[in-house]
Structure formats: structure tokens, C-alpha cells
Image (cartoon, rainbow, N blue to C red):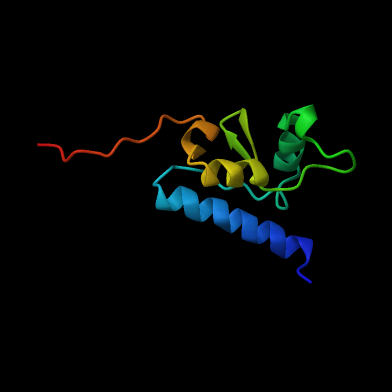
Length: 99
């Protein structure tokens, strides 16, 4: 049985790999190292997205102060090719080489 810490780490790595592969700038925040960051995350996850008991678990995804969603929402958007809109970013068009 996988413990919850390993599951959280795997989900975080999945998000980070996607962002890196798509060259999306991001800042990874480790809430275990900062009480201030942990409280900020808890406060900024919308009430309807919070669990009925306890606090929301990472990864929680934000674009600046805008809440995007949790891992399940991220995964669903990845499956349906809507990650850029999920993240509040403009979709990338195939880039043409600059002359």
C-alpha cells in the first residue's frame, strides 16, 4: 500500500513534469517548509474545493493568486487537452521560426 506522502509526491512530480515539458514557468512551493505558505494555500483554496474534514492536500495549483484547481482537476484538464485554459494561460500555437 502506498502511503499518502508518496501519492502526493507522485502527483506533484506529474504536474512539474507537464509544466517543464511545456516550458511553462512555475514556482514550486513546499508548504511543509513554510507555515506562512501553508496558511496562504489553505486560505486561498475556495470553500467549495476544501475537503469536508481537514485541510486541502497538495498539490494545489495557482496562477499567481488565482486558484486553478487540485490535482484531479489538473489531470482531467490534461486528459481533455484543456490544461492551458485550466492554468489561465493562452493556448500555444505551433510557433513559426522567426526570420
